[in-house]
Length: 341
Image 1: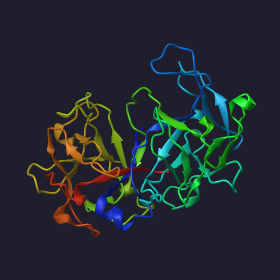
Image 2: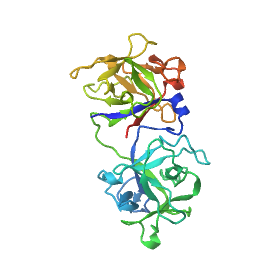
Image 3: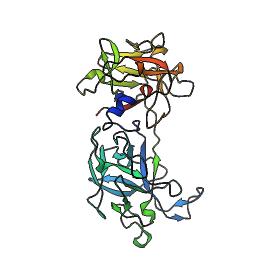
Image 4: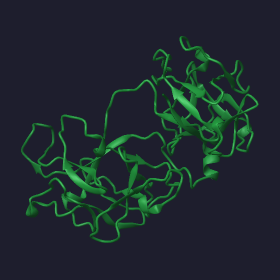
């Protein structure tokens, strides 16, 4: 199965800032506590004496050991999610994010106060809750940062008593909020988790795109409207890529059973057409650009990356038709995909 998404136009997203504010294509990351510098494994620079990850155990955030040579278990994988921070930043201007556990779907919430453990709460996509928002400090060296509350930079992630005097980090060490004291147990680095590429991304809801009378148009969000549900599918695309090497995909509308097709002439509305399971018309293939700012991307035709999905006339109102138009940097050409719960 694919993963249903919503596709936001940037202008529309700005009008609904409480729902969306940044990167939507999640990158799985593991939060690792910085180890003490010492002799060791022959890696360039320094080795980590203790190698630990934050893990969700019975609703508590604790440290557990991890094998450097193997992928972390699912409870050790976290998503750094800035989609729903509504563009909020800390006093230093750094964008806020939530840390969501891949296995449970729960987010790390601010503690009750100084020297108290952080908590887990259900992550509510689309609901702005500052108590699950964090920001990172500047790089303190070797890619390590302090992670602190968005509204109080004095309260930072701290592996409780994980210092040499107390025998360092160990399984079950609690994650608390503490004031900065320069300890390595307060410095963190996020490392990407690399896995096999699936045939499909998980289902996606293409936000603000819907189907009306056979046409693809912008619409106000309606969670009960199945025509706003779309699927990004890599099946039968033959691993076709665009000229920049981005893999192509189909945009399928499960409600109609049809795929989005570029029009024969630019500036004409895109079409919805049937598609065969064994072969795919190149006019049905799209690719996603690199980040064009604040987590938004262009959705481009595979055969010509200069042609992108465009809300016609710069419109953002309900019923605006979707066309293919040369890239001009407009907000009406920038899109973000949001997973559907």
